[in-house]
Length: 127
Picture 1 (tube, rainbow, N blue to C red):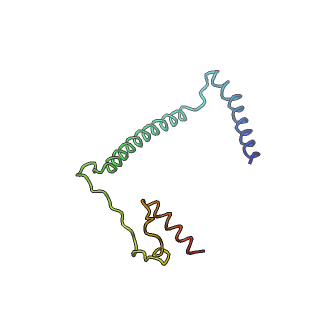
Picture 2 (tube, one colour; picture 1 turned 180 degrees about the vertical axis):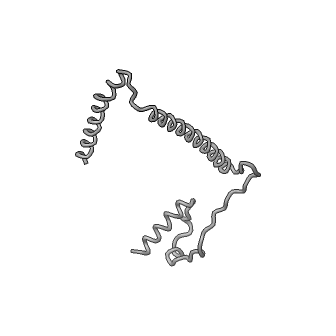
Picture 3 (cartoon, rainbow, N blue to C red; picture 1 turned 60 degrees about the horizontal axis):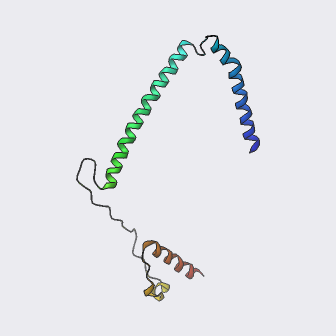
């Protein structure tokens, strides 16, 4: 892995050396690096990139505003939506023999505690 990184750094150093030896003196003498057609292509690409970036920025702001409104509970151009209710897929779970023997006074207080309790019960039944 180290040899790959060192090799890439050597290639980068060689590329910079070529630019320094060829392009910099030519630029000092007043010569353009690109032909007029190349300069026009670069300018066109720069313009398109600027337009695409501004369009993407506008769309991002638009989508973020819509998402913010949905989180707040209102649609961007409509009445408030009721909060979605979670539904559990599948038939109700059958209590296991371990669950019926478990002490009901130690009921978990939150969903996370219930998940942990279920995992512990499953681990006990596997053993």
